[in-house]
Length: 266
Length: 365
Image 1 (cartoon, chains in turn cyan, brown):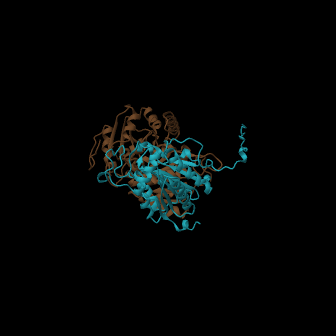
Image 2 (tube, chains in turn yellow, purple):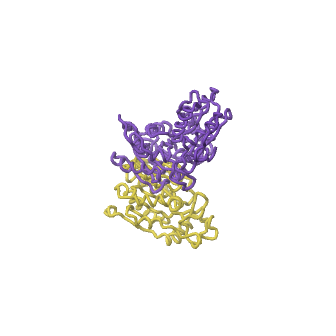
Image 3 (cartoon, helix red, strand yellow):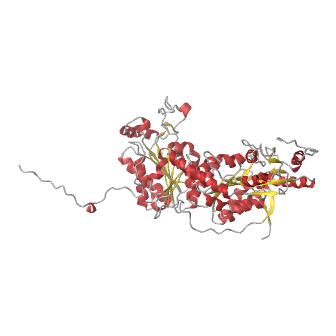
């Protein structure tokens, strides 16, 4: 019986077509994010967009307090670390003195929707030309899974052990809807990380939020529903299902505001 | 150059502009609002940045952002607003970015009132936020001195990568005086190499106050302490008035230092050997100079006068270290100590009958 000889030889690496690589805007370091958390993918989407727009060398990122506190280490761009919730104010300072630079904040829901509510509202009201990446995982991840303004009704967290009771603990805050009605906001979208199709839409939204800034149209915000397997006490796959089945009904996806100048894009 | 009549807050604003301020972020609060208003007119005229923030918290964090870009940036506020800025000031200190801050103090605690006060001595000199740091704190006693101090404040802020505070009170902010305005300063175009300007042709720059490892954060703190020691060694400033042969020394800063000058004149007219020691830097406190005066052995006693309950008194007592008795006279809530309040105390300290006490009893004596 003849033994088939399979060639194990591959073409030399330089002859291979590169179809997937680390974006230049993403630093070559390991992140500290928990297994199954979608922060890492969101970082990659932001980095890909910065690369594609060719603005890496003039981009400055503003990191929050929360799970993404080390975001500045993961992006290969100039970066700083704001006080809790103050990233939009810090970004305002950076943008006002350097209008030709690209400034983005990367914030979680405790940071942006709770302690930083005033800063984001007024940055939006002023129509600051900045891009805001707002990652919503319905809890304070970094501090151990406490209730956030975005926690779903009935959801158990370490500080709502009986489930969030809306009568005493209030209702989830809908930041994107609130910002969308402001004239200073050029782009507002809510996206999700629960499926490949949604991840692709998220990237498109991030791109538009950066384009809004490049065109000087006003503030661009993308709220991204993200998983938190560790604090939700779920495996990564269950977490994605939780987003789809429980978060999306409370936080409907879609573009809430698209400036005319962004619509004209083919 | 001839003298012009200027209002305190506006003079501070114009002097800061001539000193090279490129950006101003602030929030209205009495009695410093004219500074912000003046900036809102003047900065756009010169193509510079002015922005009224949503709060003092917003303002100081905008300042933090602009300072991270290596830009000459400043803000101004008054006591309750400064309290709100403390979080940002601590981050700024931890990140070592240069910032100029004007505090036109008013009465406290709480909402207090809008009268002059020196109640922010502790929050500016001792700790303008959590953690171990100090700002350089400059306390002018006249409008001209305020102008001169703010004029060099950006150099100080950039030399040490620190916060420089101009600590005035409501009377300094509101008064009008003839002053000489300095010329516009020229600054080079290049930015410091640590500034966030975009990572073009270099590795990314980072501005942060976050160091999770104990060793790393201790290393930062040791570096900050080393820097503070350098500031302490080089930046102590003070002024004296008739202190050469004085036996009784008044120690007072800012507006009270100026009032004390009148008290010294009147005391001298009565034949009393009284002089004034006025710290200009409240941090670093000019302890070497006061120490040197005490070492002459001429000083028999010291009177500290303040518009607070004795916040600077603690520093003076620490430096005097029981070598001579230290007395205190303080007014609070916007009340201003007058020479007539101070003179009876000076007479007592000189072993004379106090004579007629002032209409207002000393609150603390």
